[in-house]
Image (tube, rainbow over all chains, first blue to last red; front, side, top):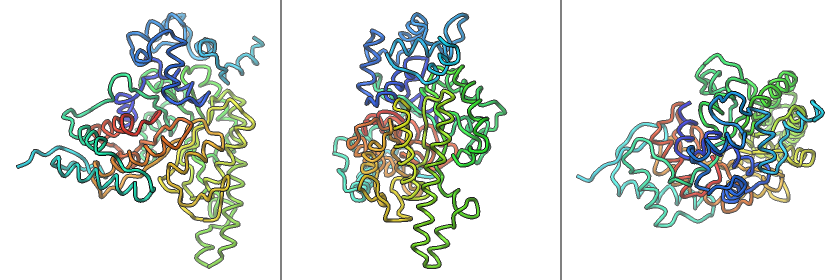
Length: 106
Length: 355
């Protein structure tokens, strides 16, 4: 376990503690290189690219946008609900959300 | 006496080197990569920067603020619930719990679900179980969640699979039969991975991680690239990550081509365009660690190869930095000082898009 956690601490964007999942989604869904992906996400969030790894900025912003936060906040969107909001925020389609819509008829 | 700095050997053992010796090792490691790959070596400034990273006094180091990159994960949750064979720590836990722990306790940027045997072929008989697990995990996860496994074409050869072992055939000078066996195994590899991923995509997977492409040589890469191509055609929005098994594609067959390029003998910067052509979203290049060399030599060599791969690629490159690759010591518990230095060097010098 020490190795992946060391990488996260040394170089990672720390997932939903900050905005690492959002930048990763743009790299994977649109094949964006790092710089482009960070700029895209920052623009959608209305922050600077340097804020994307800043837990202080992202903690409150994620809760406000309801796109999933690291701590367990009652009534906050989690899992598939958070991803439905991420789809709208980033203007992308997420496969599990498509499946959820198909299953629920939403 | 010149001041000495604590570094590591490729097997993880601590050593002490002077600044002059560190620079010598860096120059030699970079030159080795440049010679093998016919690529540019590191510049004087880059070598100085790498030496500076290696000589930093803190136990753990990190990238400069603002230079952070997404960190993707392989091996699924096996590092938690698996045994020593997968460097697992043996914590009895469900895969859902493992995935959620990576997301909410460890700060992972992406995660993947994987089978305990971690190869596509053994997933076939239990694919319904995997799809159930994927659906449950997707309901609860926010970060991208892949399905990951190894192409592992060796499982298609006797005694584990239906095709005669090409190594045995070659020993008997049955070269054509060996080639035929590899080509048929590659066809089955393509067919199986596509079939498995069709099921997983129907269950909400974000995409696929082909972990360690080319482990059984060029035919393994051939079969995997064709699987990537087929999946991209069927699922235009699928997240596809392709990570290499080693730095150079072994020419077990020797004659196989993809997009007109012979696969045998390709180095990372030549692999990247083919992975992109097949339709992958992200490429994971590899540089192997030499256990008999210093971390300065290994890291310089690795950064040189990765820098060339990043420059040759139009898609993001997430360098493979597990045990024994990417300048990381070949050890189950790689020392944190070595891991964080390699991590920082790869981001700041090679310019990778992720790890």
